[in-house]
Image 1 (tube, helix red, strand yellow):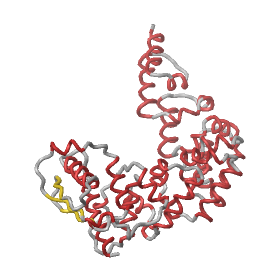
Image 2 (tube, one colour; image 1 turned 180 degrees about the vertical axis):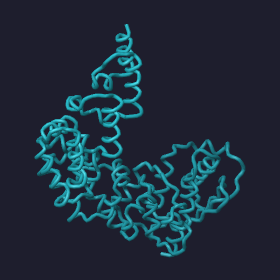
Image 3 (cartoon, one colour; image 1 turned 45 degrees about the vertical axis):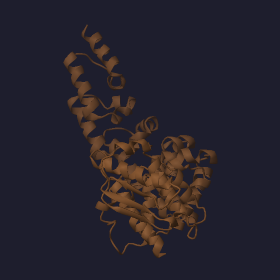
Image 4 (cartoon, helix red, strand yellow; image 1 turned 90 degrees about the vertical axis):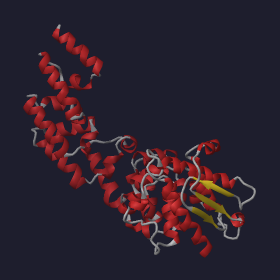
Length: 389
């Protein structure tokens, strides 16, 4: 265990160096380190000494195939050519790789997580050394915790953000994370989907398969009528489904939406799944009540929502209120136009609604709300010319 600890502890500064600002001179150092370390792996003599453009020395002892796969996976994302090594400035350090590199004494059995790490192109996003939850030189951090952070980063997950949003991840075991990944794979999720899914909802990494995840897939299959071969499409559309309680969130939302008139379960699953993770009492109902204050009847609101489900996702304070104020005040339009064109609320107030309205007023013409906003820039210019002509 001591030798393996040496691997991880000395490996982490390596990762941190590589993940610095890509837009500065550090990038050249990072590339040089990648080239130097990977070139070592291709040498038959594992005591080979190679210089690299970095002021530190790397010592890897009894490196496991897993650690090797992580290094190779990290390097693969850069697609660097070893020929670039010749253009590098003189070295400021050295890398030592000992003959014990190929030792299999500590070799681990296959696991989905390690397979994933080997194939998923890494997309590091955060500087862990600056994150309060991960001081990389902290002596008290366990080996497993450091390995866990490394695994997340190699999979393309912002580990700092994940730890902030899901503190339980600090105590989660590698085995439990592996089981989550295996379960998702068994339900059609692909390796390339993991960065987005875990990145958006890191709580999935500490979910209970039996009580949390399985009920969600059962709900998707039996109540949304989604076939198993389409699970991936639904989850990628809304990863938050996997962190939502079927009993307390998904089923009540589905019942309420069906009462509103959403009869097409497929449309809810594939297009409007975000509505299923919206709280009925605190999110959906308040928005409908706000629309009532505009003088719209419940039937009119229902028709508007069915024509434009996105209405239920818009903020009252940041969307409905300011856009309606401009609509009724500056534009002087009647609420009847909103009944016919509820998509009005989907357009940007500053970038679309105000500029278009201003030009229409300056041109002295009148355009239906839908025509004014839906037309392309070219079509809009043509409409203005025709109106002025």
